[in-house]
View 1 (cartoon, rainbow, N blue to C red):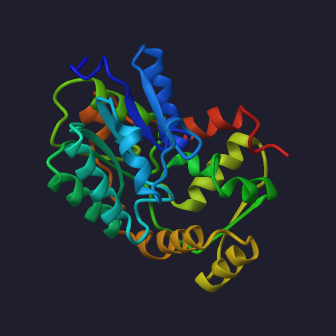
View 2 (view 1 turned 60 degrees about the vertical axis):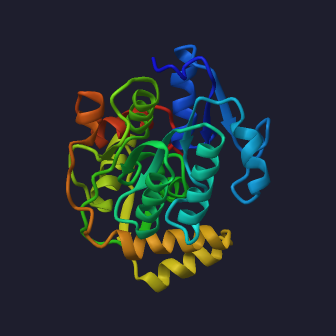
Length: 277
């Protein structure tokens, strides 16, 4: 353990996909945790900078997960301001959750690097758990997933692998100044991924490629918050253009093992019944 291990680790987005899993791992090893969320105590809200200072008082390290996503406009400036405040308050150990192929995410990485922090960056592919802990669950239950994505390969990464990597980066030496690009072990199109989920769930689930206009209309019908609508449009129209069709060895570098395969995720998740009608 590092010399900060006697102090709590602040997990921003501590109730989210990776933050919740990280909190479980740290707690299991008796590392004190402070959850940074709008319902936390003390309260943390990215949109209210006055809450930042109190949330970081007395902590030894911070896991930074930006809400709703580090790809949204303005995220880099906000994350940069937070990182500078943390360093000013003596909290120099920062681990940033970032995204592959996202302009704003890469800008946020540079802001954290420039803050004077002892940083580690986890630059991640699409989460496998977006199919089970996100907006795609409803479509999968309905038996039809319609997205504006063709035969583009994505190396889906399991949120458990991200949490494992964050745990190691926060509690073991040797990871300061490292950028780990985390991907799964193989490329799958969204049609491939849906087919694997259908097989694991024992159901007939179709994947349909729709136009961007049709996708935008479907999102509008769901009355999603504007920032979520913008984010989904950005991810499906910009990021999934083939720029991320490459595997990396980030999981092996930080964890010394292979990343979890999507089929393992699909089988484990199907067993919970989340995709069963």
